[in-house]
Length: 128
Image 1 (cartoon, rainbow, N blue to C red):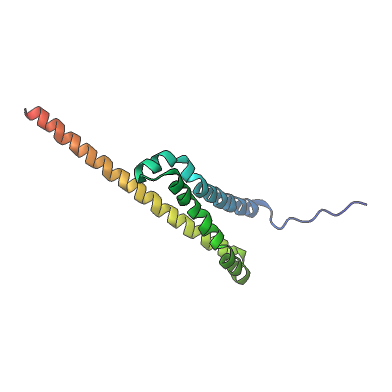
Image 2: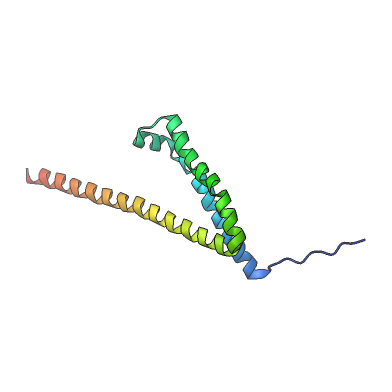
């Protein structure tokens, strides 16, 4: 009484691409969920907020996540998993790119400003 082995829906390179696509989406989602815990001390100091306020800030992600369950379910039923997941991942990547550009752009400007200030300081020392 051996049961037949069900055929896999995808094989080879396509299966690997789909797996990598969804694995990346999961890693990105996990990063958004845990980023506040990693930078909590700096975030609290920079924003001058308490532990309770940081908890509320961290909970905002989960509130948005839960609020999107019904509209996302409707979109999945209406347009299909492939289209909806692809669009959501592209939107997520674009949002993440904008955040990282703003962060690194700000860091670049801060570094240039600091270097200019040091150069001016050392120039004044040499003139004296």
